[in-house]
Image 1 (cartoon, rainbow, N blue to C red):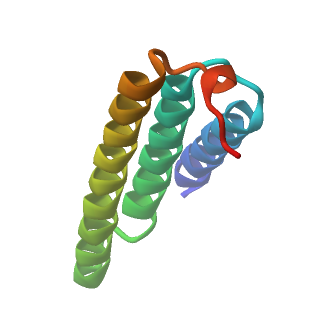
Image 2 (cartoon, helix red, strand yellow; image 1 turned 180 degrees about the horizontal axis):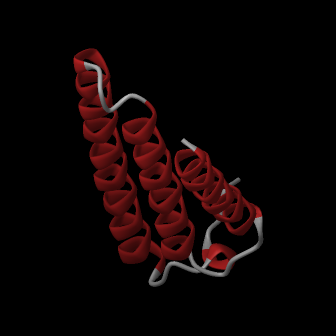
Length: 97
């Protein structure tokens, strides 16, 4: 039982480091999207470790994974549109006004 809590603690640490890197300043949009996917996958692993024995948790984790994949596809399509329109994925080249 102690090993389970140590694994949960390490995964929570990985989520927190992912959040810190996600909130820091980056030049590229792609790095931010990759960090967001990293956080989503860590949360998915935590969800699977927490409720892996129950059947309903399997369905909830599958729905979570479907939304994570669709979020990644939408983020990638936005990245492609912005790179085609502005020529790069630098945050400084975007005019958000």
